[in-house]
Length: 269
Ligand SMILES: Nc1ncnc2c1ncn2[C@@H]1O[C@H](COP(=O)(O)OP(=O)(O)O)[C@@H](O)[C@H]1O
Ligand SMILES: [Mg+2]
Image (cartoon, rainbow, N blue to C red):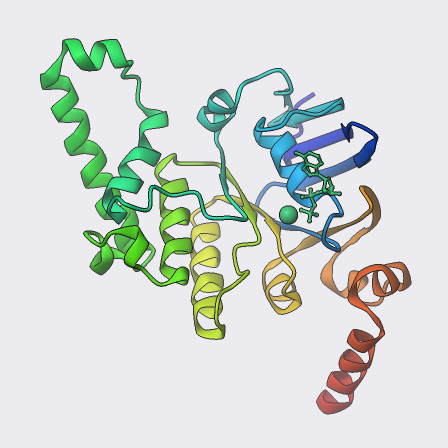
């Protein structure tokens, strides 16, 4: 049954790769109007989880519900059309093309143009192209990338490429964006900018599911956190609860983090 407060739910998700259980009976709900983070050590199964949600690498067992409906059997493009967007841990852009061109390609999944129709009807294809170009311009303005619109992606700094990827995702007008380590490899000022833009996108009503290692980013952005270790959920809660969770500290954050937090608390006192 559709629960309007839940945008995405995963039910008993399992992913096996040959002998390896990468994700093991995972359950969680992403609430509407919230930023939900998925954290955990390398190899915990975070990217695998995202790939099951988008359909890039479907589950071995279990179910994925989007807005209350099972989407498990659906192909990637159908899930994207329903409103699930994503960015990749390793950037996947057409690096020899311009920023605008990459965004225009990202917008195409929303169009009804089939290739045949495209070939048969140049006039409507031209109209479509104008529309996509216009929309790309709006998105680039929104994310502060307009000045880079005609740059070849390959020539951009890494942070700009990551931002271009976010722009391409936004072209699909997603209701929910899955961000796989968006801040990895960014320098502190790029990271700060990225957080601001994610916040800005979120404020337009887009729900966010975020995989992230940088705890400052996680703590600044997220409302709910799910922690994975060896494919299993070991904790769930708000940032405050997660930071003091013994299992999370021993599996992921480490004792050093506890000392840092204690120091921070002293500093604030
Ligand atoms: N396509 C694949 N084939 C085989 N094993 C995989 C594949 N993708 C991921 N794995 C394995 O699944 C586990 C979880 O990987 P992943 O989801 O990428 O972890 P994370 O994103 O949390 O770092 C790892 O042990 C990884 O080696
Ligand atoms: Mg990963």
